[in-house]
Amino acid sequence: MSRSALDAYANGAAWWDTAISDIKKNEIIIRGYPIEELIGTLSYGQMLYLLLCGEVPSVKKARLLESVLVAGADHGPRAPSIAAARMAATCGISFNSCVATGINVLGDIHGGAAEKAMQLFYQTKLLADADPSRDLAQVVAEQLDQMEKQGEKLPGLGHQLHDADPRISRLYALARPLVEEGEISGIYLQMAEQFRHQLELRKKRKMTMNVDGAAAAIQCELGIPAEAAKGIFALSRGMGIVAHAYEELQNRVLIKGPCPNREDLVRYSGPALRHLET
Image 1 (tube, one colour):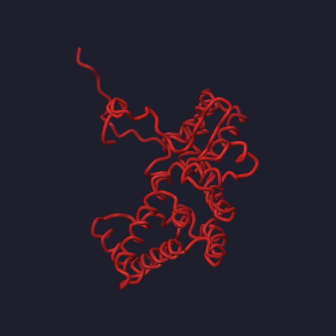
Image 2 (spheres, rainbow, N blue to C red; image 1 turned 180 degrees about the vertical axis):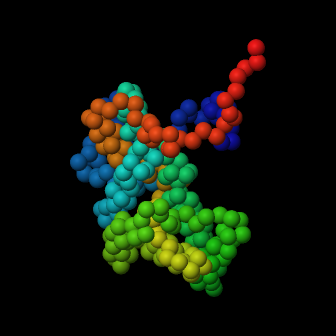
Image 3 (tube, rainbow, N blue to C red; image 1 turned 30 degrees about the vertical axis):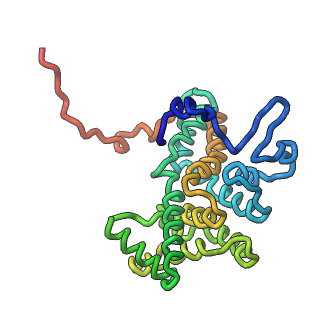
């Protein structure tokens, strides 16, 4: 942000300046297309990509994007976003507030790994393109060296529960034909695997790609901005949040806290019992 809205408006700028939609009486234009041409023609993935990136992707690219949305839709009440929505549903607030509670838990820690991985992948691609004499493995190694020096964790790898996440093999299987057909380059998928492989060699143990890493590579292949990744994940996980919040409403359980009412699950570590001086 470089200037205030009032300053821009005073200098002749519109209050809201958008290239996304033009709304007038009896007319809705989205990225130049009349809405009536888009309704019933575009898939959800195509519409999302059009709104975000400005062009209608091919059906195959849109399906690949939709596969990412499906892959991240739900991971059960172990996921904080799902648990928060379900807990909110037991507190008697409106349904949309229950959904918002789950969505609002998403951020840099829970739901932000794809954005971080995309930033890393895009940066690595720029470095590789800047010096064609180095192969991808060399550039990845240098990136890992730098991250190790700075104490940074490689995003998109490892999972608390899965050591062979079933979502990853399916996403890769769906992406592979698009690489062969030239719909996507495949460089970011190759890059993600190179990061995984090299970290595995350094750690001397198996390293598992997680759904954030695979989703990041695919979204980079589609040219989606890294800054949009958390929003896209919110759309994906939002499906699961809606379903879980609704299910919890039907259970009609009241005020379910973050854990059962057991002393061994909540530990007090403050001062011993004391009293105010009188």
